[in-house]
Length: 399
Image 1 (cartoon, one colour):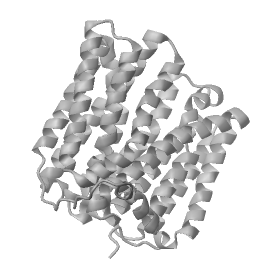
Image 2: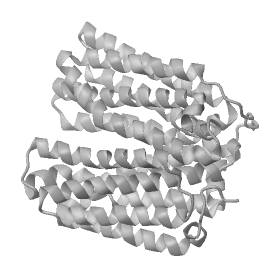
Image 3: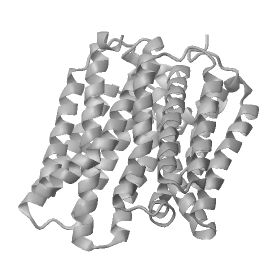
């Protein structure tokens, strides 16, 4: 049982604490920036100043995670984020903060998260036995989904007392995560250090290319997210197709996270023991089918149900993909592989939203979402042919 592994409990609490703090922060920063400038372009800059460091630093951060103590890297990232949010709180409460200062501090947080992510992901397999890793991933994902659902709502509520209040709590939550991570202890062999070179930095890329199952999992994630980005079009569907108001849009936005959260509870208690390859492909195909149903729906309840199912299928595939990448990657390579994976994840989300918006402008929202859902199912069919070993994969641990 996961409860018998205190290192994982501290890890889970630290991850949940920082996730809640970050989700609250994102709401407050958006409101504050828009209240200062009134510019939609400035809202886009918030995402850009986080996206740029996440992509540019992913490979160096992954290399660092394989050459240094991963716990120390995560602690440094958490403490850097804590300091930036604390400064943001102090400047906001003191008055006179401008949008450039806010964006600069958000960029610092983006740098901290860029280094934190691959090290944090690479730590997890050393905290629990391999057979419990899928449950650990599901439990951790449940905390992240809960943060995505409740964090923005809590941040919006606390914003009534001023953005400084939100930032103070966000800083406190990151400090708690830092302390919990400082208490974390586990037994593992230290990764063998290599001298820094282009070869060592890009070793994660070469490993992925030489491992068909890992390449198949990561590339499937890339194209599924790239094509299945219908959630970016939710405001259009809510207003023009489903004829609902802001309350309906809020429910539609929460539905995928709610479905993922419910499925994560089930996965945290049940281990996937056989046919994991087909299960993963089936879940991604289900994600595409749910997207297609959502695209064609003109009933609010059906749209809500399809988005909930979409989130549940996404959680199944995410847990299997995450476990396969972690278990098939040697410990000394996990940081660099997770760094490459971070590039794929961040790029696919950003480009997926752009692709959906571009097609919606060109063809309309319904055809854009329908093409995305059908395209996702087509990718599944192709990947089952291109990566037969992944299709035949029976267990997460490939003996």
